[in-house]
Image 1 (cartoon, helix red, strand yellow):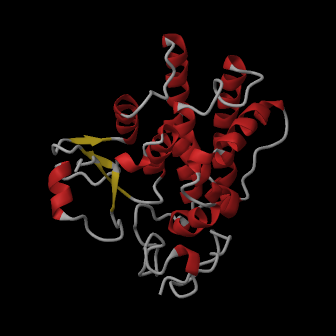
Image 2 (tube, one colour):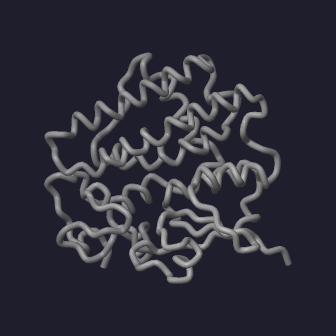
Image 3 (cartoon, one colour):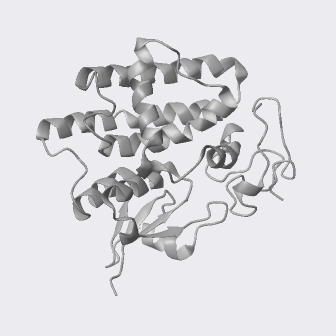
Length: 264
């Protein structure tokens, strides 16, 4: 019996989903075992021993017990060891691909800082920052593939990196009424985003799951932390997110209880 590598992860985590997307693209989903970590509880001492005390997820453990961290590192490792590489084979195109991937960090940070903002007066500044990053990505796509849908001819490595973030930013649609404006400054990235969201390899999570699970982020409490006055995290596994009511959209004035959120 073949021993598979193991990914320790949070099911709704975007950094784990990018690995799941890549494996789905390669038809290798069953080649990796996924071990779920409950971030609302203290980390298992055995897992902390493996990670040398760090708590960031996902973490890869190889069959011989070696550990890899950081989702982009694991993503590129999986691309090398499973099936035909998804990354571009042409050196210049691969460099272009990596240039776009390098934009993901600031993009992700802007979206998460936006949803966690608790000062209504600062909302427009966070909105403008994210729109500027969308315009930058739009320009990049226009430069390298103006008439296309994806960065190149199909869903690839850059798409696997960005798609989970496009999905997590559904929390901005719900809690901040965020939307891309019309016009050529956003048309190309809008097309790319829509195609990424619709791709068959990227259907691990739903809009409803994101909105409900990330409710605490909208209240300024991330990574399993509890908002003021609450005793149960929105990231708990029980009650299941499908059995909970939709949370209030007003993140600035509404303060729903655990019971009102269906958490108890």
